[in-house]
Image (cartoon, rainbow, N blue to C red; front, side, top):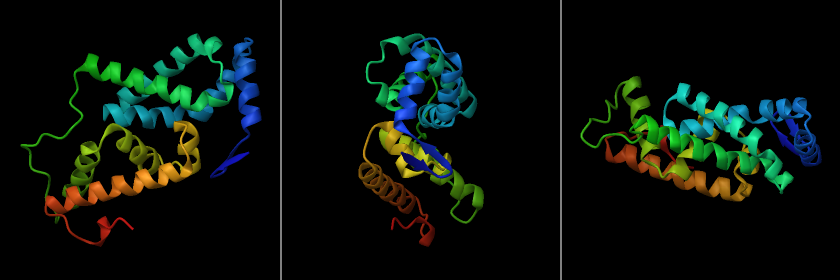
Amino acid sequence: MHEFGGFTLNLNSETKLVEATQNGHLESFAVLYQRYYGAMVALAYSVLADIHLAEDAAQETFAVACRNLPALRRKDRFGSWLAGICRNVAKQMRRREKQAVTASAGQPVGDPDSKDGCTNAVRRAVWQLRPAERELVVLRYYDNMPYEQIAFVLGISVQAVNGRLIRAKRKIAAYLKRNGFTGEDYETS
């Protein structure tokens, strides 16, 4: 059993849902969809930087997963398998849409004294991170996902989630400091 906030995930139950879906029980796939939709939107957003495209990518992810689910051998790895599909779908969408997801170096970061300037600077700092780091930050701080759930979805340990988030926050703080944003709000402890 894994507890995620008010949501408990029984891996045995998850495996049974995957097996039932593979056997044609579409209601089981609907349960899996409900469990993972929010996480897939957040993952796609970490690649696309557009909530509407991220929602489209999440929908496409489930369509691909539904078609390919019979080939899934490790039923206990459904979450990380789905996350891999989502990353690929989002990257393909980004290429098709030719969207720039990194902040332009020539544009000003923002005014440290205004709330909008701070928000924009944090957003730019996040988009300066490597994709894997950005993914963790978006899941944790934009989607409010608990560490345990992030670890399960991404197929990594809780300790890895914690360590990677600490490093990402340090990079964000360094970016903000380089761009004139100083203050206790950006400490990494």
